[in-house]
Length: 179
Image (cartoon, rainbow, N blue to C red; front, side, top):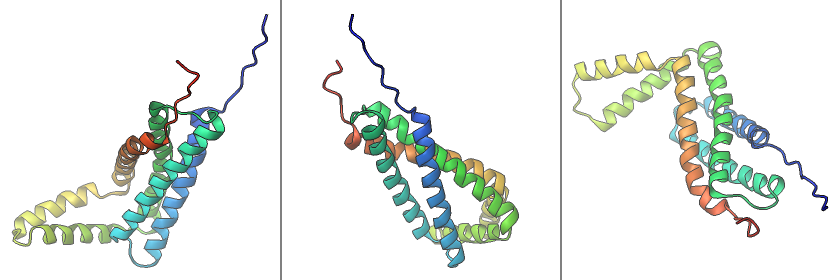
């Protein structure tokens, strides 16, 4: 009889959690830097966050492929892993967002609403006062720490899924020994 030895590999969840927490910490630091520099609602913060997410997905998937899976990963594995990684990052970021807007600087919500108003006026300069007031009242209803935190989990996870759809094409490496 042949003695086959099973190789114990770390689970996907553990690796995704580690990288997700690292990405989450970086996203929080980006938020803090832009907040402290007075650019809380600055669009550049969004672009930098997206770049960190994309880079994080690539690095995490590469680490999963090369360190945990012996150099091979299927498209589906890469897609699921990248999405799970960003899900963990979004959980951490959402906890921070809730704490920030609820306890640290509740007045910052006014900046977010003001930015929403400016965006509405830029998109439609001929908007009536009644329409603007109605849109802002909806914004005030939705822009609350709890809702912002929950919506961030969904938004970032979905964005991570879309990014993983693309990165998985390049990160996949099929094992030629597996049929």
